[in-house]
Length: 283
Image (cartoon, rainbow, N blue to C red):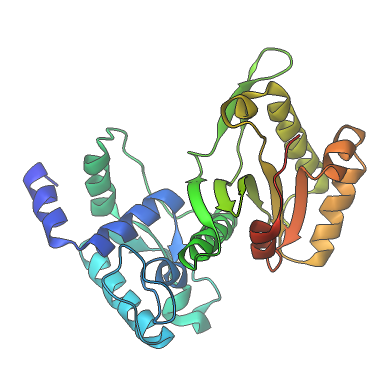
C-alpha cells in the first residue's frame, strides 16, 4: 500500500471506522459484541463522542455493527479469526476480529511506526485472556459514558507495563493487564487490573503479587502520583475468588498488604461495584 493509497483510504473512512481500527490496535482482538458496545451505542445510552448517532434498539446496533465490520473486512482492514467465541450458535456476535494487513499498515503510517506487527492466528488461551481484558476496559469506558465515573486514563498491554529496579539492582518488569485512573467525588483512584480466567495455578498468582509488592517498594508510582494503585484480580466465580484470596493471605510477605486493602479479588459481577465504590488506597 503506497502513501497515496493510504491517504485516499483514510479519507474514505468515517471517524467511527478509524476508531474501530484503533480499538483493535489497542486491544489486539475484539468480538463483534465488544465492538458494538464500544462504538454503536443504543438509544438509552449517552452518545459516544465518536459515533454519529445512537441506535434505537440493540438489534439495530448489532445489524449496523456487522454491516460496518463486513465493509472493513472487504478492504482487508480487519480480519476475522477462525475460532468463534461461543461456537457456531453465537452467530456474528461470536466472531473475533483483529487488524488485517491493510489496517495494520494504515495505522502504522498514522502513528509513524516503522515496526511492523505481524498478525497470525493466536492460541485459544491468548484470545480468551485478551478478550477478558478488553471486556474489563470496555466496562470502564461504559461506566464513564454513563457518567458514573470519570475515566482519566486507561492503558492496555503493553502500554501499561512498568519497569523498575529490583532489590538486587536488576531491571524488572511488572506486566498488568490494564492500568486505569478513575475519579468520582473527591477521590482519584489508580488501578492495576488483572483479568483472571482461572487458568493459572495459585503459586503463579502469588509470584505476580510479590512483583506488585516489589514495584510498590520502589516508590516510582508514588513519587509521580502520590499513591500506589489498588491491585485487582477479576475472577470468573466465587470459587476462584476464594482460591486466590487464600493464596495471598497464606503468603507471609503479602498478608499485611492484602489485609490493608492493596489487593482485591472480585468476581466479574462485583467489578463495577468496586470501581464505583472503593476508597482511595495507599500502601
